[in-house]
Image: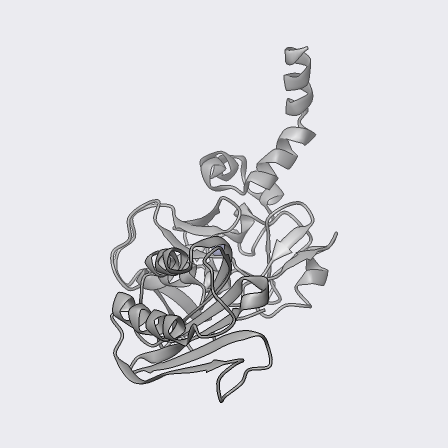
Length: 301
Ligand SMILES: [Zn+2]
């Protein structure tokens, strides 16, 4: 799986593959490909510094497939296009050190070639930029590192998301021996870790200011001031045999349990207080256990 190896280097890659309806002959369409690359640069406000270079099955530089290849060099990086005339199929690959609008770019290409069907991939993941711009990872004396607010955060704001591989296991302790950091349970036997986002870097607190909403989104539980550490209570999404390796909690809150407890070991008061912030799957398991679903079924008969 792809992950962002260097978050300091801004770059964006968009790969689009499409089936087109436009008539492109397998000979003599070099100008079309050339114009597309120049118009693409204009549309994205990039500066062409070299090219475009077009290769075709009938030209001097022959690609091995029937169709065209085009490359253009921009001051901001560049773009490639590959056209398979036999299959009415094309690929556009854009790589840039300057941001550009993904949706507008896709619409531009769709219109240019009268695209019937398309698929695309963008790296690094656009969600990362959307959500993690208000938080940062910093080293701390007590816990090694933690996530801090770079600016003021409002209640309900999404701050990060769990984006990694999904695992299945009946025992959470087995999963955590397989992954870097830890994986977050999002159903009774399903876990997800994080490659690209900071979601697994939030420290636990028995008195948290963030929680996981809708399976994967780390969300502010209340308004948070600039510079405050952002924490989640692992007890609100863990209910298994897992224990932190140190065996104790370092949160230092007045309400500290002394160790990270599973949801079932929270006090009745905390369970009630944190119902809106508890993982849906834990609440669902509780409802099943307490016969709530049977009662509901009977009442509907
Ligand atoms: Zn604690």
